[in-house]
Image (cartoon, rainbow, N blue to C red):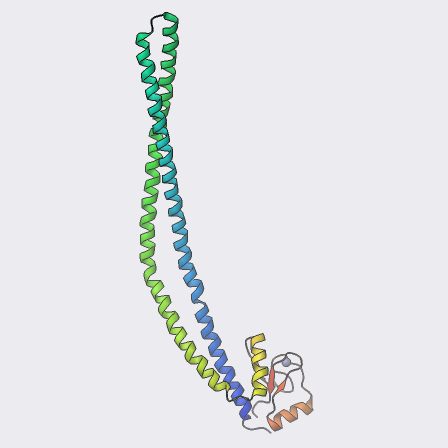
Length: 239
Ligand SMILES: [Zn+2]
């Protein structure tokens, strides 16, 4: 019965094709976001580790200063005690003074050992910082190229999107408002096919049978109908 497609249907199908291509391009553009986030995340994680390593160095340095002060203080007291030994004459006093000197010597020895261990920890912490600084520099260098590639890809897609959107509006201007509005509504609700050909006697999308009378009218006049079940725009296909 029907031969060529009605002009409105042709225009609608052309618009649908534009929108499909546009959608694909938008997906490609959107996929750049997570790629950039991946690069940012790797950088942030390393920066976080470096910050913590630097914090550890500062903490050990603070402990070292405090311990050095304590040792200085204990040494001064100890020296004073040792000097007093010479002036103590009586045996009881001498015994007590000796015990005090001995105690202080032990404390000092422990503190000196602690200071050595602390120095070792500090050296390790500084090595970690140096290693992480190298890793950071390496990561920055390694990210230069992929970041530049992402940026130029984004610029290319943006330009293509602008062209395609203008082209889409041009195509849309040939579709009658009465069809364009429901078409746009359907597409925003569910991307994918909004304009579907009848499949025999049924909706090409949800397979619901379309009454013969409506079908005949569609074939005869090229009228586009909304499927009452799934909401797509239905048209009678060629032949
Ligand atoms: Zn349907």
